[in-house]
Image (cartoon, rainbow, N blue to C red; front, side, top):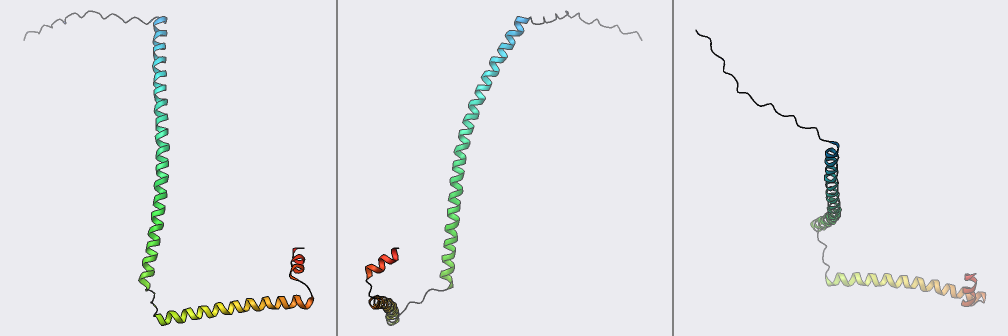
Amino acid sequence: MPAKKKKAAPEQPKKERKQYPSHDERIAAANQKIDHLKALIAERNELVAKTEKILSERRIALARSEEALAKTETKKERLLSVQKRVAEGKSVKLTPEERAEKRKAALAKAREVKKAEKAKYDALMNALTEKGSTIDELLDALKK
């Protein structure tokens, strides 16, 4: 077998090396990078301010929601307690005669209390007259 001939690779032109930037070019690049970073920082500061504003609004809304939840829970508890009270048994309606008796008993009790107060007042007035003092003298003595 005959030996194969190697094909010659086409000659590639040699790449020229990129020139290292000069000091002025590097300073200009650094200035450009600084300007870019300052703009980026300013933009991010604006975003942070917006986010903080939104966050404060959402915290206020959250507080309102929690307050509404607490009110609703207390309302539910109140309704449940009323429902249990109704379920335990309704109050018996009194007949007109029973209401009249209850009213008479309450009036009699009020009269007794009034009589006791009047008896105390009369005892005080008797003690004052026995001692020979007046109400004005008693008030002056109490004020001292």
